[in-house]
Amino acid sequence: MMLESADQVVEESVVAEDDEESLFQDIDMLQNHGINVADIKKLKQAGICTIKGVQMTTRKKLCNIKGISEAKMEKIKEAANKLIDPGFLTALEYADKRKQCFHITTGSQELDKLIGGGIESMAITEAFGEFRTGKTQLSHTLCVTAQLPGANGYTGGKVVFIDTENTFRPDRLRDIADRFNLDQSAVLDNVLYARAYTSEHQYELMDYVAAKFYEESGVFKLLIVDSIMALFRVDFSGRGELADRQQKLAQMLSRLQKIAEEYNVAVFITNQMTADPGAAMTFTVDPKKPIGGNILAHASTTRLSLRKGRGETRICKIYDSPDRPESEATFAITPGGINDAKE
Image 1 (spheres, helix red, strand yellow):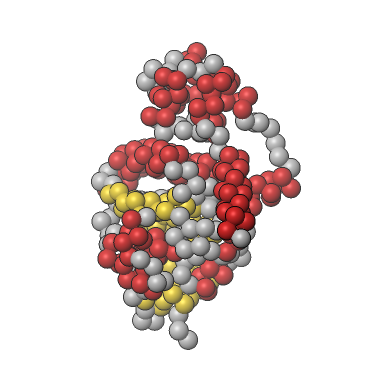
Image 2 (tube, helix red, strand yellow):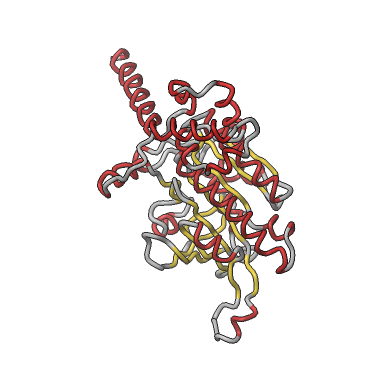
């Protein structure tokens, strides 16, 4: 009996490796196509660790990497294109590929139902709202729920938390871990935390995140940025710097989307609100809107609008989603994190 179960474990791990193999191809494979080790090392230092990563990087950006000439860049691109089929898939083949996606529960069944099972991998989910609407509480709860085994064979995994507002509290995770009967120290050990101080620092951390996801492939399941816009609001002021800010923001979001797809992780970002001075003219019910403009609106796969309800309850509305209808759900903020609201 023991032997049988041992065989089962081995078989499962082989299947997992095959899955991972199809998820991304290691950049070291370029060696077989005439790219030397030193150049591959330079690419890795720039946060490009997979063949898909080469495909996702523009020629101009590759040339900007120190030590990569135009001739080398063309050679790298050519080698990468041989390894990845740049052609089309049928919708059926793509549907099959999408089966690798997983959902991370929010801790509230109502909220999960609203967004189709939880926070989706290979996508950016944005939650925006005023202060005290539960954005950071949702982030903290996800740090714990991402580590729980879930539906459709989801095994749970580690989390990366990038904090721009100094609101991350490890003790909060202890309370949430108690709710799910998890070992507090183990839960905290599985969350990798970084504090970003400027928008540039925030972008540089993305290279570190990509390297980490590559080193421990398949281990990390969730990347949280709380909040995405806070530092951009500080570093760029006035209309004069708006175009520059939006350009930098677009690069940041593009990097997040690529990381989500490249390593099959869920990306959850929070966002702030601003008063809309033009709303009074159009008789809009809610004169506030999320910041970041159209760039952020188009980059987020699913946008969730949070607002206060009675007492500890909060209301979440689907603001934008490619596959979910516009609808609302009520949840509560409890000592054990996000939970269903009691009727």
